[in-house]
Length: 76
Length: 350
Image (cartoon, rainbow over all chains, first blue to last red; front, side):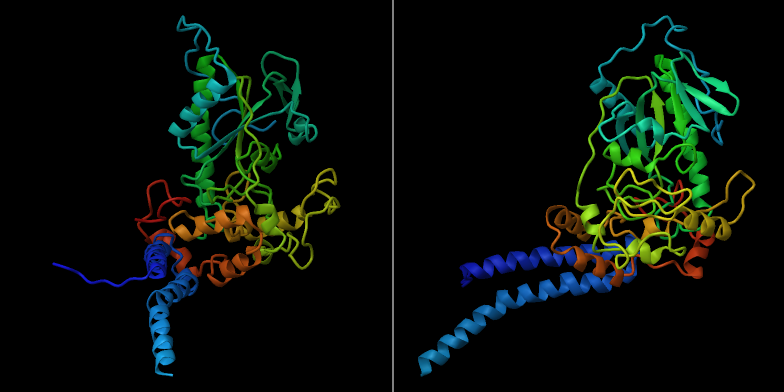
């Protein structure tokens, strides 16, 4: 079976970064309960979750944006 | 003279010594003794262990840290009681400095103003007597200065032995492992030990832009970051305060003690039950080690001060320094408490 994946180098970098942040987010989310400090999850969501969303956007959105810009340039 | 709540300051000395067993005296090198004592102390449940020497005068006379109205030193073979003073032999100049986190509620959120700390104190004293018995069996004397008891200025020993770093809070050294609770327990002994070095992992630099402990202090004994950013040589604040011979934050011990005595339950023993420790509990460096984010923050702070102010603000926003509600505190009596009670590492209840 052949899998046709077209993944650019920067998608690998941001993708791995996103994965690391996702693991950190999930782990620390549960850790706040273990530490009996569940109120801290809001700040962790803001800091780690915010960074995770940014890297996810860069992983998938950047490629889409580049393609869109490319299409628009070709049409002109 | 001040003996401990559990045992005499010199320990029970009730086990057979090497002479009685017909063995030769243990004569290890200081480095070997360090490892040996680390093993025995860890076996008895002590978490962080450091060593320092009383005769190291590189930053001043360390023997002055032991109050002369309680303990003094002389060139004698064994201790003597002279009036109200217990005189310790000069040869006992090596200090074993330990922090115990097991059962130690100091610095934990739920530990504030509860009897938990008092229970811990007795347990720790019991464990220290076993260590003293071990030393006695080897042929060495030891003298115990209890965690949070008078007679000695304890926080400097935590700093000098490298267990932690000086900070804005009212006393305790901040350890890189995430424990700022309580003072350290100290054992003076004639067993040769190699001193461990002081450490710098960015805490004092952090304190200049933080001040969370000062905001948490109910008595106003700690200067806020608005009042004082950097440590100063002018730190004497009147009676019962630090002297101007070393740089630091001018904490007002009288205010601290007055609030503490007036707001904790008077106990049947010679001290009040419970403790305040809001400063230590609120400290940004006082954290459990469950969440990886704490380690990331500490690693960043130790290498660059750029994000210090941001981290201090985020810590406050996360509510780490908040006092527990009455409902939260009451769970001490209804929750399924962890073995050995509240402690810094691991869960407070299972």
